[in-house]
View 1 (cartoon, rainbow, N blue to C red):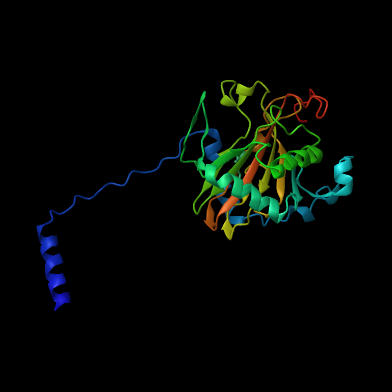
View 2 (cartoon, rainbow, N blue to C red):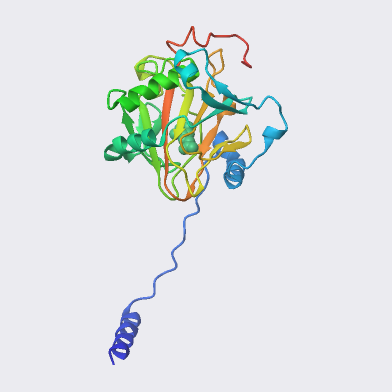
Length: 285
Ligand SMILES: O=C(O)CCC(=O)C(=O)O
Ligand SMILES: [Fe+2]
């Protein structure tokens, strides 16, 4: 009885509702920007999710214990994997412990906000970066302060403000991604220069979670993607020794298909590193 009444009720509503005009779906056009022309490469790399096996082809892509002549690392060497030579990309396995990864996420969680990117002199929310992020000062907790010490030991660079940015913690939900971009500023007007410490010479990015599917970091021109290896950290130089941006570092955070992805970024700036990474004039270095 109830069912029959419902059917009659909804048929009446349908009869009375004017037919909706066909809605034309807007076509999503990809802007004609150089790095977006690499879209197909990017999507291909996201689909292979770090399964490239170049390691077998080049003996210079090694795994080793890394002490960097630092007393800190002699006691606790890092597991370093050379993932790519040009651009130079390293993966440090087990760079943080499970406890540290959980602590960093716990400290960041209350402060997460929609991520932004540098847009001219300002910062803007854009649809090509879908995630939430928060900044953590080294004084927020001993775990964060210790991390700076370890990053400095691994890279031989100064990792504390103002020579580096605070730690940026990023969370991507399902569908979260960051399309191909450079970490360094490509314009002198960028807000990155506000601290007067130059451009971002290097990126040190720690994976604080694993992901069930998707989410690898794709290096478009290097033609590799690094899978999300929990507790591992990726390092690369954004700038050549002559201070110019290395365009081969174009990279992306692939869409997360299943799971929740967490990373922490430490961006190291040029100034203060003069004796740690001396300048050079060769545009290839
Ligand atoms: O999430 C990733 O794998 C890459 C993130 C990234 O490139 C960035 O935050 O600048
Ligand atoms: Fe990036």
